Figure 1 (tube, rainbow, N blue to C red):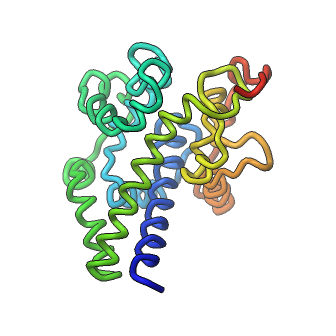
Figure 2 (figure 1 turned 120 degrees about the horizontal axis):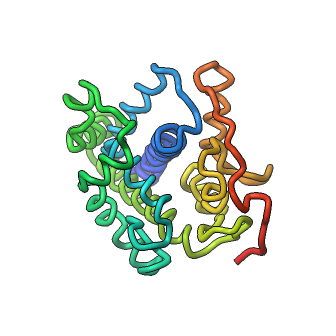
Figure 3 (figure 1 turned 135 degrees about the vertical axis):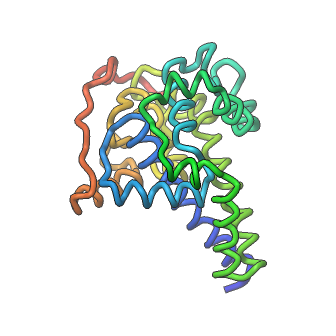
Length: 249
């Protein structure tokens, strides 16, 4: 296998891992309490999230919950409906960091996400996690492949996350009456996050796919954890307009 191809494969694998951590742990488990994970699984997710994304869970949860509170309106951290999807796609990282550093936002929207000694001494240091993640790739695959894989991962992960907030609020099928859209290709790339219209219809559901043909890698992981007795699911209440499908946009 050529150096470039190996770097692409490794970078894609790391991105898939990061997306699973994001959708299962940060999004469905923490932000919406759609499922409860066993403590050992939580710790594994914390470590992997730190190494592959550098995200501080409390900040991510706060930004995401504020997005749901003000979707498409003034106050939304990344309002594609107001500023345009292209702007959000290009500036999503800056928009996230600005809101994540807002102490008022974090205190209001993530007050149930308590930090512990592990956070203060380790996981809150994003640069340490990302650096260790890159070092691991370099040690295992060599400096050329490792650095190229890290570059591929950074672009795929950040681009996919931005697309959910940007493209996912402009394009796609709208089965339910909200401003988000369903995009199969985006769901495939982001472990299920592309089923954004479904998610905004029933935010507390651990499953983002609503049809048998909708691929949701995050849901497959959750089902596996549940089968092993490592996850308990929350039964979501029907969202308003969930039973009133409308034509695709």
